[in-house]
Amino acid sequence: MADEAKAKGNAAFSSGDYAAAIRHFSDAIALAPTNHVLYSNRSAAHASLQNYADALADAKKTRKAEAQKEKEAGNAAYKKKDFETAIQHYTTALELDDEDISYLTNRAAVYLEMGKYEECIKDCDKAVERGRELRSDYKMIARALTRKGTALVKMAKISKDYEPAIETFQKALTEHRNPDTLKKLNEAEKAKKELEQQEYFDPKLADEEREKGNEFFKQQKYPEAVKHYTESLRRNPKDPRAYSNRAACYTKLGAMPEGLKDAEKCIELDPTFVKGYTRKGAVQYFMKEYDKALETYREGLKLDPNNQELLEGIRTCIQQINKASRGDLSPEELKERQAKAMQDPEIQNILQDPVMRQVLIDFQENPKAAQEHTKNPMVMNKIQKLVSAGIVQMR
Image 1: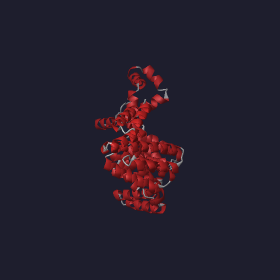
Image 2: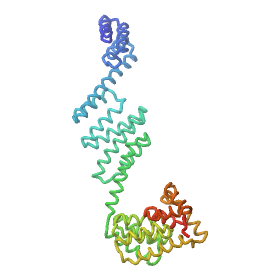
Image 3: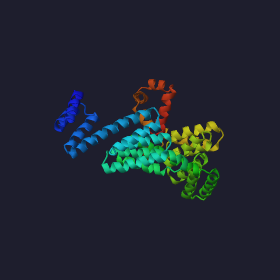
């Protein structure tokens, strides 16, 4: 056993037989490789034979083993939130072995928990510097940088400057792409953006910019109007009027996807703002999505039953839908409408539905079954969508 070999080594050392002592201590180490006392004893035997290189190697192993024990003690203290004791153990570990940067990153973690952010950052910087000298694992360097970034985020809550933290997280990701670091980076960038918005928020200036946009809109200078509405939204991102007005500009410019997005945001911010529905319906109409535009106008009409703009929108949508159902579209119009409809996920789902496919067959081949289908509101609603899209024609 290791203890027996150790005892023989001690006896040989005491009698001055250092070569035998080395053999016995080596046997003991083979049985108990983590016992740092054995390395210490063998180091003394090597030194007695003036084998200083071997003595130094064993001495280093002894110190590394002792350092690991200090680290374990530090970890135990950290878990108990006995931070001062943990720091003492990590500091001792570092004094015993300065070639393991985990002692620095662990001590930095304690400082972070204690709110001593400057000390945390210093230890992280030392870990990165020493890690590069030692060519340490990239993951270890990334861990030090991530910990530093976390401390910088804590400090940013007072300094209002998230840029140092963001830069540090980015550096960490170049060392090792860790999901936790990426999450921290995203959170820091989000916090920075929110802070900038808070500092930039000014409803009065937002109203002034919106009014400037209105003036350019009246002059039909739509790109200039868009710039002012955008600035208005930067000053006050919660104003549905600016989204509504910018949606109108985008519609005039033919930028329908952007106009639709703004109109939907307008409704999201204030579902009772009728103008949002007229804007959205207009965009959908110009996109030739007449059934969707009709639905939007009807939603707005629930809020304002006498709104002439909504009523006119409904009239023009029905006119276009009836035109398709009567087969009054030119071949070019029909082809264009069908091609657009086939890109619509809702139309695709209807056509891929086995039940609806049978319904369409029944309308062509089985008048009696078709008569029954007309009594089903859900089926007829889907048929109406296909008619509006020009996929089905009723003659």
